[in-house]
Length: 188
Image 1 (cartoon, rainbow, N blue to C red):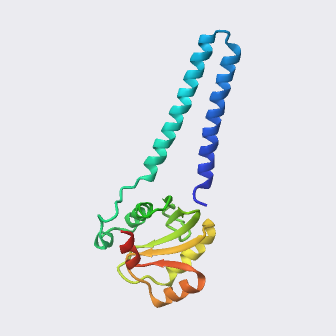
Image 2 (cartoon, rainbow, N blue to C red; image 1 turned 45 degrees about the vertical axis):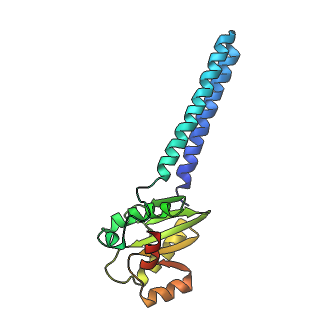
Image 3 (tube, rainbow, N blue to C red; image 1 turned 120 degrees about the vertical axis):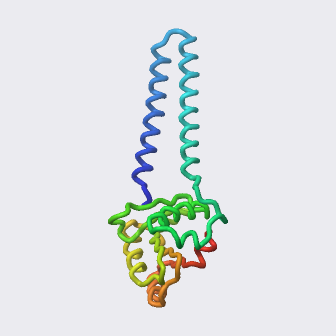
């Protein structure tokens, strides 16, 4: 799944800091005899927990914002990009179109998937093809295998061009979604 381990580690880390902070607060409250010290320790702890929560929300919101804004790019702009730039921009395009998460996979050994995305609890394995000609059957085969590798629900090939009839037939047969130039125009 999409960086599930990384998110689990972050969650465990946040819980650890919260529990450690509460443990320290309890220790101070139990060991302190002064009411003033107890009150000050409680106030500081509550403030720190609130600050950690605010920082978490700010970081989360910043990650969700993308550079891409709908309506400012044309297909011609995408045609002039290189492949890696197209893959990176695809994440921003997906986020701008309601996807909760869209992340690039590693550049080499990506198992036929360039972008992993999440929308409405459905995971997408997306192969990006910024080509000058029609996209063939190989892209469909690659993303189909990559979908299984990344354990995603949906396999998608996204291109700035169109697909060959063989690619369309195979995609229909094995359930791969094809997003061609027309679909990309709608996403922009």
